[in-house]
Image 1: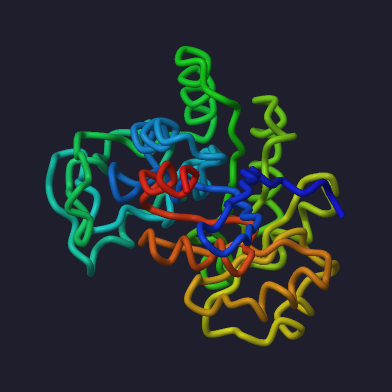
Image 2 (image 1 turned 180 degrees about the vertical axis):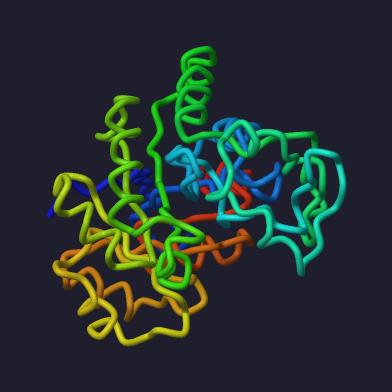
Length: 301
């Protein structure tokens, strides 16, 4: 198995009056789409915000544009509840899929504003006009921010978005294999391949990356509705390095089951401090949250 990517904080805590102590380990702490609870998701502003809270890594989503550029976006279209047209108009839920990223060149994509609209349920977001960035831009801006502020190097958790309904007719996204090749080219070009984990729900993405470069850790994303670990893993040609699922179904039994298979377990998306503490206690290896501001308190304890 590849080297475990723990960001480990080990503290011996003496319990007053009982003469006992325990060892606590902080898992890898990851900013979800940057810092979605504090800044617009998947934007350079959001990634920089996450860095300010000393994250170990940032998680981001990528899709492919019409000119084969790797664009940082959770959907392969412009979502109605977070984006505005180049003219500044709202996008309706019914028409959002008419604004397909795969049908545009990046110059067109950059004209949309996906930072001014405050996302429902995230009242603490600091909003401003922002474009969907290229993966190359994100890496450059993040690395420059690290250098300018003397911060630690962080990891990149890159989720490649891919569904069969999107690529069957090659209308919404390219095939998983094509997407994997394009993403890999960017990661090599930017020189961060040794700090990248590839995330995917689609097994074909992970199988292709195993073929391209087996040294890159692969993270299999599992929805909470799929609880049969063995059945889930059978979809892959080989075991991934990390099994990542919704935090609501994570308990000590699942942690033990995953660890016994020589994999790590990540939990997503963990947005309360109390849930983070509980997940640390059951032994998860990674926590992904919209609120990396909680991480400072978690490390302190």
